[in-house]
Image (cartoon, rainbow, N blue to C red; front, side):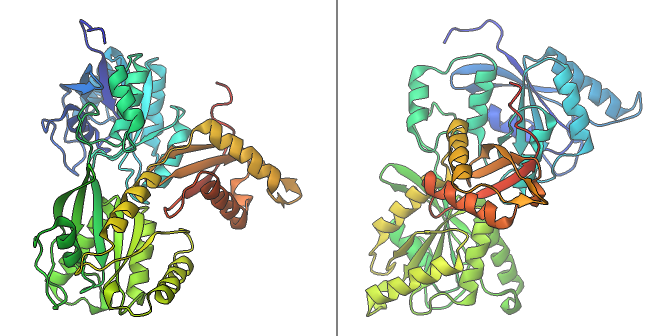
Length: 467
């Protein structure tokens, strides 16, 4: 890449408390910007350098944009931000996906558009289910498709870096581009993509007390890292352990056993249970460990639903399989139970293992890496719209009040899990049964078994039609 005398200047802007400083720290690889839940912590512009695919950039962390009376501190902070936009070669406009689009977001998006500078729309805090609606609402800002990220957890940073480099008209060196195209984890790297070390897959092992979670972690690690025993509740903290599986780095989280809330009385157990729930949210793949001798009690299914609602990739492992006499019959029954109880996520992988005798562990790790790859899968917009045309021709949308509902366009705003949005004139009138038909067709056409799919409808025309 040709060295530039003056690296491009990128301004990170948005209203207070959307995570601008966290993103600044993530991209610069530093902790120079203060971060807190307290809005308005950043007042002065802060500059730093970032290396994205070999391109050096200057980043500016700005104060939160907000309406304020003339001459006030907030007004001076806003003027500083407007100066940063005027000087920048590119603007990263950050919103809080969990809070959704506010009036302030809309007002300041207008400022960003009127600046005439190229803008990349960033939907931060997009991890988990709560962020999905905000990602979809972000289309209304007229700044193009949002890049869904979690600056705190490092999710989506690779996709963002790629868009920033493209928006600045820079080229990714061929060696780095080749590695990104061939790496199933590309687009989600916490470390710079030029690193030879792939980012670890975060895997949480959850289940009821005494299902054998710590024993499984010890078996996978090949050492007695966790305390184990017949007493339920030995594990309290969510302990992370690093594992290398066929060159893929894995970060395993052994969690406390989850019981029904009514049975949790001790303070320590309450804290342990909340820690386990946080581990589910932080994880990318969650292994739900089932005791083969007491399979699928109500709490197992509750945990399974929590995992899919959070949008995590799920693998079901049946432990203590060496104690089961009629293995084939029992396995058929267990797979049927999973299919019926988690019908919203068809074909969840079910693996029979014995943590104590260390059998079935290769099959479990294979299921984890395969499910993770599916969970990260992205489908191009042209492919999606060819699929939509075929799906509509096979089964057209029903009429509502004598008028046909037209679905005009579909796109995939984010992965992890695969999230799709379709634009139509009367989204509220389309029956849930037809949305389910489209979701199932998507899953079958693009080979997305065993992971949550989020499919939403938005009112409006094709946002790219004029382009």
